[in-house]
Amino acid sequence: MRHFYQIILCLFFAVAAAYSAPEQTTPQKHPRYNEFTALLKKQVEAQSADYGDALDLVLTATGEDEGVIDRWMQAAAEGGNAAAERWLINRTLSDVPLDKLLSPEVRSAYQKLDKVAAKGYVPAMLDKATCLELGLGVNKNSEASRKTLVEACRGGDFSARVQWLIATKRLENFSDKDKPEVASEIKRGNHYVMLRLANLAVSAKDKMDWLTQAAEKGNGDAYFSLSALSSRTQPKQSAVLLKEAVRLHAMDALFTLGTVLATDEPDNKYTAEAGLERDPAKGLHLLRIAAAMGHAQSCLLLGNAYYNGHLGLSKDDAKAYHYFSVPQAAGVPAVASARGLLLLLGQGVKQDTTKALEILNRADKAGFPRAAMHLAYAYYKGIGVKADARRAADYLSEAAATGIPGAYVYLAYITARGGEGLPADKEQAQHYVRLAAMDMGDRAQKLYDRLMESEEWIPQP
Image 1: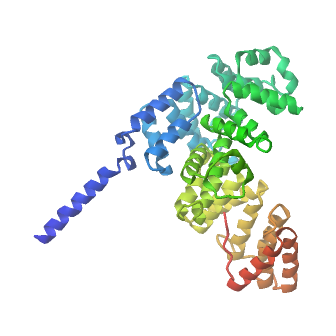
Image 2 (image 1 turned 120 degrees about the vertical axis):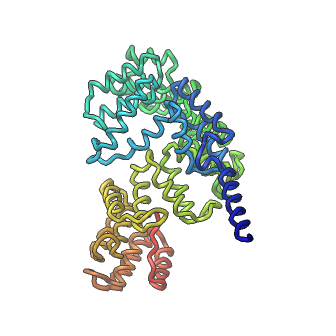
Image 3 (image 1 turned 180 degrees about the horizontal axis):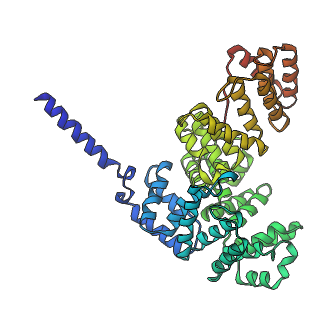
């Protein structure tokens, strides 16, 4: 009889647990799900590609659970919401290797995008135009791309109009502001055109004038640029502009303010003079929104914070891998290199050395030095490849020569110890330490001594 009651109690607690966290399986049952879909509906009606409000709500409603975002979007997409459909489609169409542009999976994603674009959702139409121009999921067709852009422009959408002006080479230089098509958009208040002119401006005055005009019309990126320009001379005004840029979900602004609020930098003169106070919870929230939208620096910061247990976060390799795998940022070499390392080591994800080496080689060819560091580690340890200390040394030399002075310390380490194809040479090792010290100072020798004592090389994303 006692066993019977134990079974009943287990069933009771299992059912109770299932009902205590409905968002894990059915986002539709969450008390704030309807509010989420209302925001997405409003986004579609406004022809906006800004997911900031919807992401803010999901993270707030689920206790900052970044892992549920796609599930909520999937639920909304099943309900026919174009913005949610576009979100999920872009997860597939982002970071596609050149040899897989026309793979079945990518072709299928494009076909889905085509259907969303047919609903008249301008951001999807612009994505379709880009796919046609690049040959992403569909045979390259510049004429069809231009035609899609023209269709997107018919409703007068500002973002579509500026993309059409750029694609048709009507807005290539600052002097193009006087062309009738461009002047017409300026008169209509197209802040994207104004921001483009600010970026094309040669003089500081022209740049400031156009940034100011773009900001006055509600451009978040313009607000952020103005904040950055005034950060040294007018920190308080800079902070006001930065907060406005954050309100408008400019990703660089979310990252900047998020970093300021989340990190402990008591000597940060800007923070003190701008009147900003540390608020880790809010800072991390802003960083999570930016990362979800594909901001590479935010993905890297959060990924490394979880990997090392920094910023008040517990070490969590799975969450680190999550941020290193955000599709919209995954193609950035720094993010790709971090993801490749975790795949190589099987940290936070099932080990896949073949895929890891493919990703790391791609990032290395793109010129990212840390990818060379990770490849050096793979060859030195013989992970996914035959151990080859000589080749590892070559990769470390490459990394050191292209931006990572610390790579000289690891080159000294493997040179002192020797390995497959690399004779031990402690005198040459000290030469490498001295090269590292030119940038690192005393830290170079200390790191080398620590490596030699522990004989442990622990790579960092």
